[in-house]
Structure formats: C-alpha cells, structure tokens
Image 1 (tube, rainbow, N blue to C red):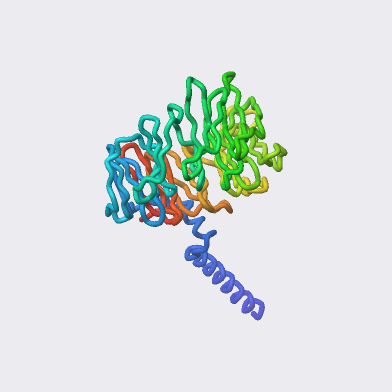
Image 2 (cartoon, rainbow, N blue to C red; image 1 turned 120 degrees about the vertical axis):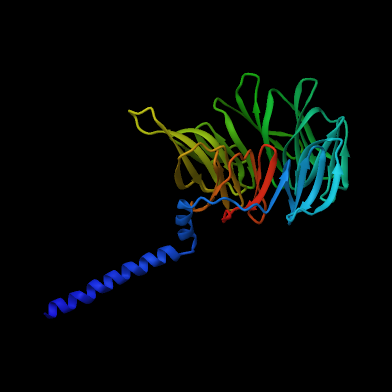
Length: 362
C-alpha cells in the first residue's frame, strides 16, 4: 500500500511537468520559440505603404518613389515632401542621394532634391556599381573600351581606368582605400582586380570559375566563386576558405564578412537528384548552420544582422544564428531593400510595397 501511495504522486508530478512544458513551448516568445512558431506560420504582410512604380529608402522614415518620370520623396503615411519631374535618366536613389544622367552630364542630388555636384565628359553607358558612403563607383564605355571610375562625394575623379572585357560588379572599401572589380574578359574568364586609392593595380587574378560576388570589407576582399567562398587580405593572402559540396547558385556577403550561399548538392553518389542547401559562414570562415530549401531562391541578401531569402512565394527572414524569425507570403518580388528599422521594401513588376520584416503582418 505504501508503495502505491508513493507512485501515484510521482505519476501526477510527471504529468504536471509535461503540461507545464507544453504550455511553456506554446507561450514561449524568446527568439528560439518564435523561430519554431515561424516555421509553421506563413504570414501575409499588412502593407504600411503601397505605391505605383519603384520605392527606395531615403533615410529615417522617408522614401523615394519613381513612376512615369516623376520622382517624389514621401513619408511612410504616403504624404509627399517634394515632387520633381525628371527629364534625365534615373541611375540611383537611396539614403546616399539621387543620381541622374543626361547627355553625359551626371548630377548628384541630396535628400532635399538639391544639386550637390555635376560631372561632365564621362564615358557612355554609365552604370552605378556601388555607392559606398562618400564614394561612387561607376562603369562605362569609351570608344568600345570598358572603364571603371571612382568619384568622391564632391564629384572629383579619384581614378579612371580602362579594362579589357566587361565589368560585372564592384565594391568599395568603406574608407575608399581599395576597390574590387569583378570582370569577365574577352576569353570568358573571370578576373578579380583590386585597385588602390590612387588608381594603382594591387591585384589582378584570373579564375576559370565564375565569380558570383566580390566585397571589399575592412578585413580584405571577400569572394564567392564556383563551389567556394573565401576571404583574402589586400596582398592576396587567403585568410580563410570554405569549399562546398556543390555548385553555388546564389550568395551574398555582409560588411563583417558573414557569408550566405545557396548550394545545389547531390542527394547521394547513386542518385541524380539534387537538393538546395542554404549555408551560413561566419566572418572567420566557420559554418554557422545550414537549411534545406524546398524552392529555388531568387534573391539571397544580408542586411544588418538578418538574412533575407526571396523565392516565388515570399520572403524568409533568418537571424545570423540561423533562427527563422519571419516567413512572409508575398509573390512577385523582383527586388528587395531593407531599411535601418528592418522594414522591407518589396519591388514588384509595376508597384512597390513597404511592410514590417520581423512579424509579417496578420
């Protein structure tokens, strides 16, 4: 009898513990609990702002909206601060300012729409590769030759250099000390060219595999290429390298060296089936975590401490620790921007939406 009396409270305590644990998991609101809930809850966003045309963050709680030749600066409630009719080609709009081009005359406007500087006699077919704080990296063509140009925020040419092949992308060190260019040469080979602040060529490497991404950061040059990602210093010495088990399809690297890639891997040696893996690498080259993706990612980008994966159905938001903090249903996203308040700007075919990124709406 005494033995049975001892067991009954033990069973009761065990059941009570299970109930408490279940309630704790349901009500848990810390990042891990929210991540688990987010795995099963895809939310449709409640747009803060919806406009025709393109939307871009202008800093603070203001935004640029460009549609049918009209450029407006608006607040998140849709109220216009100013409105301009542009007769030039719009090349860039963001918190750094607005860049327009007409008849080889490039003009930088500030957030009030006031002219900062004008630059004439530039090459044809000007593209903006990067606008990094006080530095504007351009590419263009002059007599069928490709040029890279670095401008200061006052409009001075830091350097202008010709290159063989086509400049695909580029990145500028936060202080303008170094510039990294991703170039495809005439033989369809990839080149990584690193340029000093006075236009001197510091590094010119050729690769057989395509370079998907190059990033000039304080520690060195980050590269995502073929089936690997690595970071090297400005003398070309490799600081870390991470090789993957398949081909990289998408990738991005933050200013801290934190790297995200989507890799297509074989299921096994005897199978031809492929599956998609999202892999995160820390700024020192260590794998943080990996995810299996059910659908192909169209965009993979890192903003601040979060990673954004866009597919045909919406946006997943992950923390750098690998926690899924938001799963947002929104089809048709062509481009993505994120503000300093972690608000998402989703640019679609003919309109743009602004919504919260970490909660996704109801």
